[in-house]
Image (cartoon, rainbow, N blue to C red; front, side, top):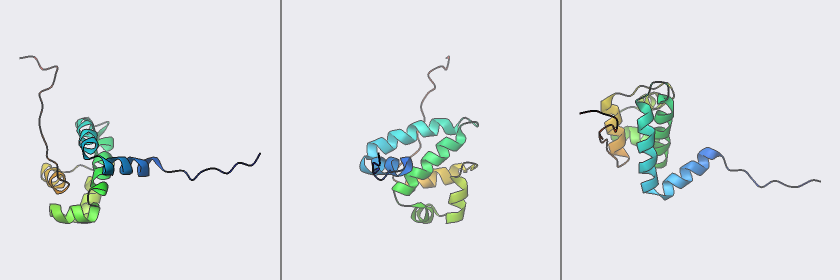
Length: 110
């Protein structure tokens, strides 16, 4: 039994395709990812999600240029071990047409 397999598409490629095709999905994707950035044990996932959005909406080189930072600095900031400054985070979000916002925690007691 010798069946030919269809060419597989990587998860990352499929993710980029979906994000590229639906800007609202990209925004919601980043909202969830940004929540994980606040948690040190889950920060890598949030930074890599932001990197994926950067790749989809301009590419690392173009976004770095628009954000006024070097491409190497952006690679480091959006790596699994990255720790971007607030200035970098805001500039990168602006370069991809998004902005940072704040919401009240649901479990905060007044």
